[in-house]
Image (cartoon, rainbow, N blue to C red; front, side, top):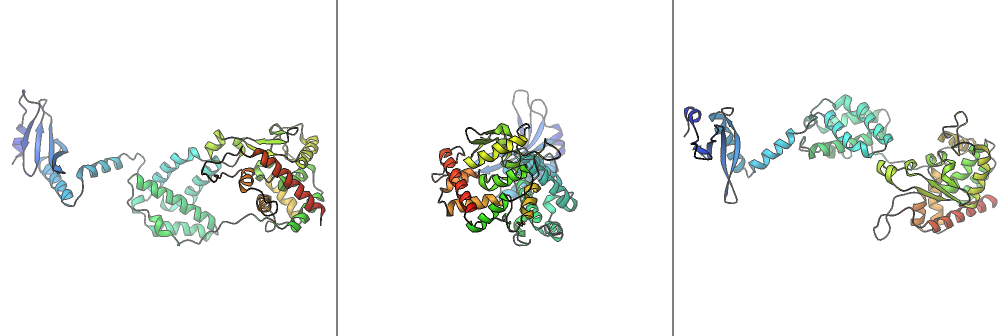
Length: 404
């Protein structure tokens, strides 16, 4: 067995690449011709001899090297791989931001946010800062217990924000999964919260799907006495059934009335950031009735960029409240019919009343779906079918309007 004096005086002959000085139980000191001294411990796997570095002498003393050797032997006796365990610990130590909940959450957020829309990124960050960081931010994520996370989320529930609490749990779940992947935690505590929060069931936008009731609404729109811009938006909303933000922010440069086509740029569509930046535009075939409405509207707003400019600021589109208020004025509160609900109206009635192909309907709604063969659906497909469907839909709305 070695002594401290042996270790201090150990040298490597100049004619050798290295010299080894054995201690006991597989521990030895390796000395190079240049004088460096390193501790190694022999380990065996699958009948083959290997070795594990335990540090340099004298930084690691003889007593410390023996302690490290014994720890390695205990790991082997427990069926563990000491070398793999060290690699894992080394990977854990490379986490640059630390291991508090705030540090891990912001590290995860920084990797995700570039692929999100600005609105979604801002909303997620605000929720961290408002609902989670004040209670958990400075705690080591490994030490946080499920009951602590539940207490933070219940504070959100207590202010009546059930949906926000549900979204907060989803954010926390992603952070814990990231923490697990980066070695900060050994357990995802969010799994323990299943059923602990008030269930949130997303609400659907109110939508009329009864032909008779829809006819009454269409006649009410015809009788609306508001300004020409809101009147045009009201008439086009059920006919084109695009999202409110896509319709009200429409620009004259996007429409070709002679070709009866509206091309909405990808940047204005409801998509993830990559889809907005690199995705194809969304084509909306314009039925004859829509072209007539837009030609009339162009008399009022054709001198500007926007089809539906605001009354006070012509560089900004009308607000969503403009059409919402008009519907309320006509007696249609949000529990009866919403602007966004016209999409559900069209989707349901095109399938049930006009027997349209669901793929064609989904394409016109700009929904990302897959066809029966599993190929990603291309929104530019079926353009001829969509044009025919849009004209049939507009004619159907005329029939409902004129047949009480």
